[in-house]
Every structure is written in C-alpha cells, then in structure tokens.
Image (cartoon, rainbow, N blue to C red):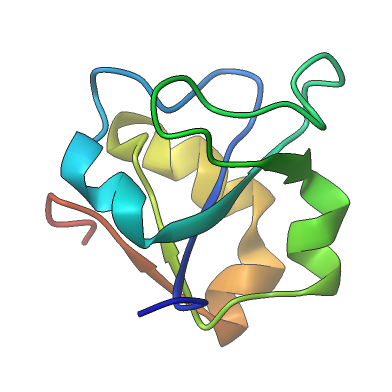
Length: 94
C-alpha cells in the first residue's frame, strides 16, 4: 500500500491519541501548515512532516483523516482535494 495513504493536517490537529497508531505503517508522509513541524518527524513512527504545499502539488488518490471530529472545517478548506480524491477514516465521514 505504499504511496496510497497520506495524511493532511492543519494547525488544529496532529497525529496523536485520536489516530489509529497501527495505521501509521501505511502512511508515507504527513502534511502540515505549522512551520515549526515541517521537516521534522512524527513521534514514535518517525513519519516525515512536509509542507501542506506538497499535498497540493502531489495530491494522493486517498487521504486518511485522523481528525474526523474536525471534518467540516477540513472539508471546507480542502474542497479542491475533495472533488478529486477520497477521504477515509476509522469512522463514517458522511
């Protein structure tokens, strides 16, 4: 599944206890808008954190949304991805 699942993040959510830790083995990178995080790695699994522009320039087919409780804000901001790509999560996103 390499290259299939990616995670996008905004300032209000990070890959923490809310996320399914076992899923991190399938994630190639995390995208974030927080300048201080870019170029670093996630705790534990050491997943590289890239600038959100990397997500826009290299849109995946599928993105795993760990912050399902912020889906309305995220979907509103990421409308262009939502038209082309698919969001998945461990809960129903409908």
